[in-house]
Every structure is written in C-alpha cells, then in structure tokens.
Length: 242
Image (tube, rainbow, N blue to C red; front, side):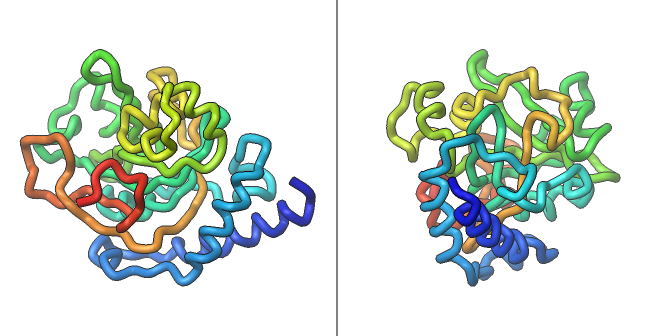
C-alpha cells in the first residue's frame, strides 16, 4: 500500500472512530445510525489489498483503545465495543457481537474464585478461559469499582483471512469468527493471553457500528432474562441474528 493509500485509509478510520466516541447509554443504541456507513464499506474494500498485519500503531489505525476505556460500568463498555477493531497474532477483525457479565448468576464473577479473580481485581485486562476441554473464550475486564467483563462473541474478519482459514480449517469467511471459540482459534488466542493488559498482545482500536441491538445472552440457564447481549443489527457475521 503506497503512502497516499495509507493516508486515505487513515482518514476513513479516523472518521469512523470519531462517530463512535460519543458516550451513549445502552438504550440509545437501538436507534443509532452510522452517518459514515459508506466510509466503513470503503475501508473494508481497502483492507482486502492490505498485505501486512494491521496494527494500532503509527498512522494506519488511529485511536487505540487503552485500559481506561474499560474503567466504566460493564453495561456501558459492552455496546461501545461493537465496531472496535481487534488485532492479534497477525490478523484483525471488527467486533460485531459481545455479552456483558458482572456478578449476576450466569457470570464467573458471581463468586470469587482463582479463575474469576481477574474480574474483581482489574479492568482493561484480557481474560481468557478454556471450556469443554476444547474452546478458548476472549473477554476484557471492566469497571473500576465493581466486578465485570465483556465476552467477545463474534468478529467480522478484515485482514489475515487466509491465516484464519488455515487455523480454523474452514473456507467460509462467515463461519471463521461467528462464535467465541471460533474467533479465538482464528486469532490464535489461548491461555497465554490471560492476565495480559489490553494493548500488549491483544490490541484494540476504536471503530463504529451502524445500529446496535440487544437480546438475551446465549447458552446460559441463569439470568436468561437479562438483555446483556449486544450485536450489530443486520450484520451477517454475528453468531445468532435474533
């Protein structure tokens, strides 16, 4: 990518990050609309021709998300992560679905254990756990004053897609990262990332979403009435549409 193309990409991503910088409550996202949707599509087109791993450094992806972003309450942080750019291990993608967890009965933070201590002691840290003897799940700890974390459920692949396909053994781009275990495999995320600070190995940059919807969290039996799942409405890369 030449200098002018880099400059164009930077401006487009910067415009996206400015839109998503507003401090909205979860309810506001039901009717939120992205005025720069065409810019988002142009960015995705540009990324097809990017021959190197995207990073949050330098001029390519401005406005990295740091630990302070996660100091807010979990239910404020979760919807603001929709549209953020995730970059790790040579691949990148756009977060399109998350779930919020605090000390509710479905959460690891419902009681303090050796595993859940990270939800009590930190914010802005990577929390990775292993389930069913086969899947890793990526979370970011939240809330300066209370227990919390946000589970990343689905990501829209942007760069390093061939590497993702090799790691997953799957060709269909829509099936690469449409689930927490799938995206961890595609991104090469495992327990070695646990207890690392956001920005060290797992990097995030600000992005935006056209419209964020809410619904019940998936695969839980307790606190199933809480609509703490946030996802980009109409995005084909989410794990479940409804």
